[in-house]
Image (cartoon, rainbow, N blue to C red):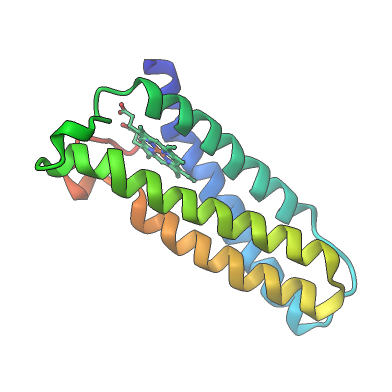
Length: 139
Ligand code: HEM
């Protein structure tokens, strides 16, 4: 369980890095009307899905997930807010990639740009950053 939390915690930076890189690449490929694809889009989605998988395991095991403790901000955050926002972000990223795959040129990259940017913002908001006093650290 401890190892999983550390993996989940550290993997956030991989997910964030790949998403931010994808957004920049998508913007420049959109602007230059690039007809190609980018493997970065795929890697970002895989990293996010890996995070989802670990998250689902943590959800089933974590003492911070407890539906009878909704009056407490920390329990509510992990039981409801973190989970729901991350699930929505995952759906957005997956939809972006699936839609983009069927498109070409500027349309493909614009689709990735919009969906990945939205997903990225949701993830940034739903991460228990240390300054939010939710008992989680930087790593
Ligand atoms: C990209 C998506 C996600 C990111 C970046 C992310 C990030 C994090 C971070 C940074 C922590 C704090 C770890 C620590 O204490 O140091 C955490 C905890 C947790 N996450 Fe996620 N998460 C994601 C998706 C999910 C999903 C989809 C679920 C559930 C289905 C989930 C369930 C949990 C749970 C239950 C904890 C608390 C674990 C504990 O300390 O007992 N996460 N997450």
